[in-house]
Image (cartoon, rainbow, N blue to C red; front, side, top):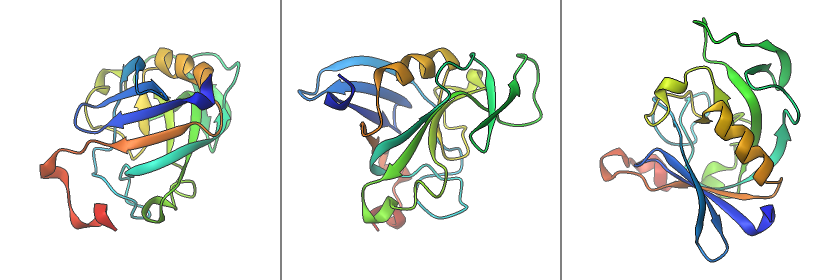
Length: 165
């Protein structure tokens, strides 16, 4: 099922859809994209645009709220205030399929859970696509490496020349 499915992220609506090959939506989740902007500039914390694929799944079997640093499990978030934005629960690592976003893998752009779930639905990330921890577990079980991801549907006021490179 997974390779016959596609993910589509809307920047304008701050949501992700799981679509089949006929374009029918099977599931929709609210997301959070970058609060810094859009594009593929190295070290920018921007969310890249275009076509991608999932190249690696990390965290299978990990408990919800597992904290990852450099893709390694380092503990569990207790749900309280945290000094930083954690990568939690599961990681779906993306790779760009277009010239303009080919650096996505080396920029460590993921779909992952977060300790800032209250910000889901608005731009708040450091470039990744954030989901709630429950949603990222559900998504992780529905997709495989090779699943295509499209990030776009950008409001016109957010378009800048870099997006067309």
